Length: 115
Length: 114
Image (cartoon, rainbow over all chains, first blue to last red; front, side, top):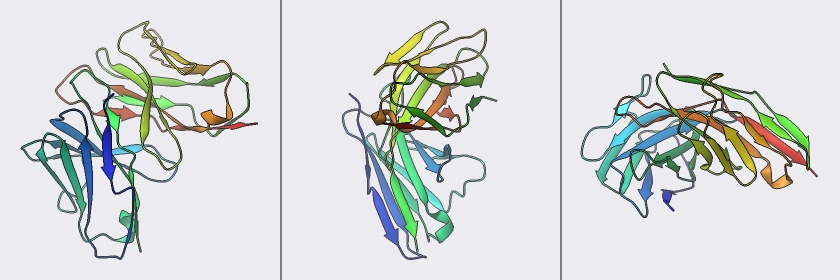
């Protein structure tokens, strides 16, 4: 079945560091991928829609200069948290779907901890 | 806009008990409905889905029926196991427009005790 791989699974770094998270579709091509953020014991909040070959679409309230998204190929989208601060600590999850009418498949998530 | 209202947790059951997690939705048109499960420290896994009214999704003993008249998609399992302990999310995907993002409910934490 469709597999989405996310890397790294856990990041701990100092405040002010930029962190890049990768999301790969392993056995299908994905023109669209989604990035979510999840706070402890809460639901997923859609941050942005990543579009291959074009700019990402950000949800209201999400800073596009803070959360840089690049979708340079049909199998890879990256989320870079720039100059991360403790309030950016969270669980970030990506998803993609093989075809427009197929369910989304999720990566295993990246736990980001900013000290 | 679209929204999903999900039964608040946490839910604690004994092994072999019957499980129901309520989910209702608001959407225009004919959305697709999903249940996802999230185990601790992991991403979401699709549990089951239904794409039209009266469809029943089922997987691993879990079932949910798409009820358009009550705009509901309640999750049920006849006999839960300890390994079913996880967070369950109800979600919908709109049938209109070009976007394919999901709208999630708030999640329900299920703990099954031996």
